[in-house]
Length: 339
Picture 1 (cartoon, rainbow, N blue to C red):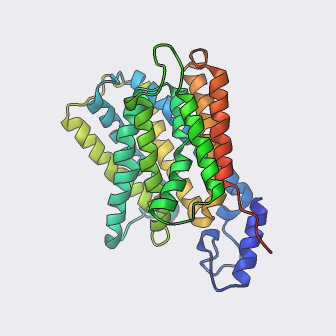
Picture 2: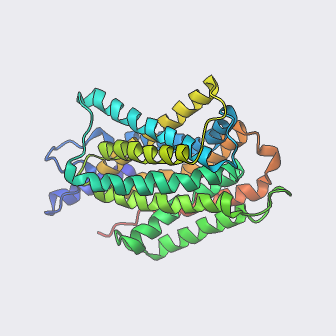
């Protein structure tokens, strides 16, 4: 499928005046970037999704290792802020090794950094961290898997980046059905969806969808790695400052806790930078189809790392997971091309 898309893109470039910069042809080079090769897209996209999927169980473990009371919102926000400050630094330093200089954003483009920091880091992760603290890891992973559907709705209805057709509507309905099914029943003490748990994770996915639409627009004129790195630094600084000002603190500084904090920072910096690069060098549909793996990885990692397998109704969870996965595939399946 990926090879077919690449051949079609090359054919279209030869027979029209339109140049598809997403496929790496905008620089006039005859050879496409390695980031547009099918095996590379598959490998890096799945690696990004695996990293992102590990965030929910690892955040919960971070709360334990750093002795953070999940009801203490200022401390939760401080933890999130420290993670993303460090994530931005890691992303910028890693890029500077290759480029022999820290990636910079032109002064005229700093308003883009502010908008991304607000949507991608500040709003999204205030709700995400509080939601993760109040929702089981497996159900949270399934709800978080609805991000693709919100991304489609925001791109079509708000930013008008593409059209909302019947295939996308069917996929979205299937995905939302899976999210609802995952929260209809559950443990006797945690039956159903709660506003500050799964509800907040759902709000976070909407903010993430807005940021995805923004990075797709902004990356056409500016370096996506620089944008992602600096927005993490800015957003993380704001979160950490707000959390500290409200009296937040780390209950215990342990090697395990610091190691988890560094790992979560790596997850954000590496995965988001890789994803932004893939979106710059490929058509969006060719990349986001791999997001079907997010709820799969999330459920598996939560059951393994958090020992939640015995507390989750697996038949219902499996059906919900299937609906989410199939819905994502339906939404992102390439349309048959007419001769």
